[in-house]
Image (tube, rainbow, N blue to C red; front, side):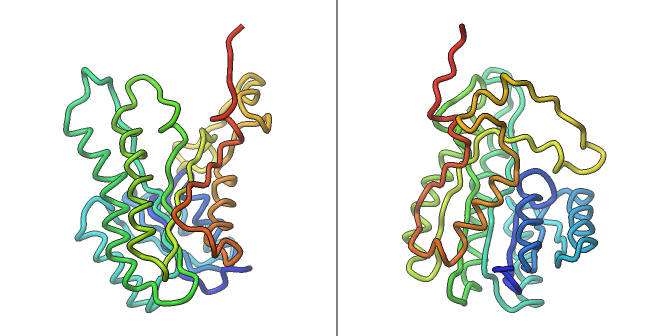
Length: 254
């Protein structure tokens, strides 16, 4: 219980990797704020954590809207007086192709995935007054190994790496800022109830990883718990790759 009474904000904490991260901090004794735009997902996670002995509350928040973030941070500060950790996990992907995708969709992905972490950091950082405060931005190894027609998502995650470097400088030495680059993980068990379903993974799926298994959100959550801990107090401005070695393995077709 190394995070007892720590105040942790997790954006996108209602589903997927963000939900798992929120639950992991709650299990370590933290007060977790689920900043999520999906009311159903946020409410479900709030209930799940509290029903299992944790401390969580959901605040409906669109991180791309500064007014929403200001309101969310204000409610957190009114309740706790400060923030210890911010995890910027909220992210969306785009649909379509380079040639069919409306430019508005590009703008929306950038607004959530890049502007969102910027806005949240801007308004949370002034309330990070204790020792050992940390901010973690969740990125993806796909920025180094691109796929067809993924331009908005990958561009946003690449920008997030540069944003992390800049914030680490701006907020030093009081606040550490790091990036976690996740590989592909099976998020099916961390979806909201109506979208939850079993995903069949094959031996071929697992063989793409040096550790011989597909990742799960718990792998990313454990990386968060480490990099925001006192044990990682000398680490800032870093990119912690958490992908089971997939990005350094050559996967050939025979």
